[in-house]
Image (tube, rainbow, N blue to C red; front, side):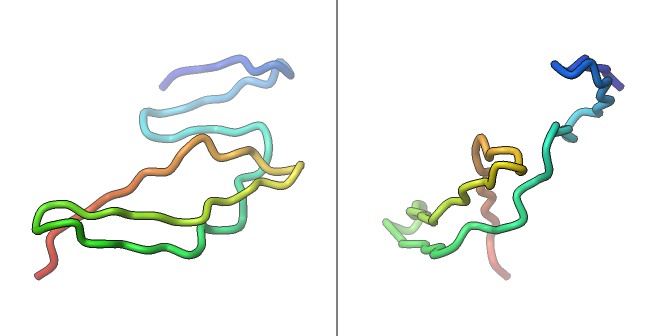
Length: 70
């Protein structure tokens, strides 16, 4: 477990794969999600991102995962 000192001198504890924020996490989710097949092995994924409010932490990026269907 690591420790990070933030700008407000608040100590945050973190573990690999878990992040802390100074503000609340955004409560809205991306919208207008679309997946377009390019060929048998590739696709294009698009969505409308989330704008955080002033009391929410901004989103730095998204993680997209894929898996084979049964």
